[in-house]
Image (cartoon, rainbow, N blue to C red):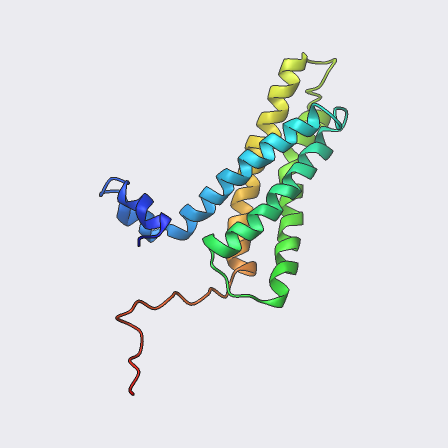
Length: 173
């Protein structure tokens, strides 16, 4: 039975398949990132318009922490298929703390240095500036940093791929 990845690849135009196969780790990382981006966006907006109305940076940070925890599980199990190491979690947390700071920085600049907040701008302008700076620019820069750092320091020991039946050693009775 084909895996979900194999079924998805069967639907991709034939000319694009070699590129996707050559860069499969990056494609998986981006898919995980897309799911976590959607989760982070929903959480950020939910927090920002309810309990953290006056604290947009805190709302983004909390949402990003939750998205990061989900991304750890998905990246470890699927994107990088990493073999377990004790220090992996610590390295992931350290990289993620830096990435969360990178993610928050454009929102901080937008809100507090450029003063794109009420009453200097309309509520609509403030929300657009917050979304673009925090969720789009911040997430993009943090994603580039995370991919580089995860490959360089966190998921360095990959799990061995499962052997196909033809590659499995024959048992001699």
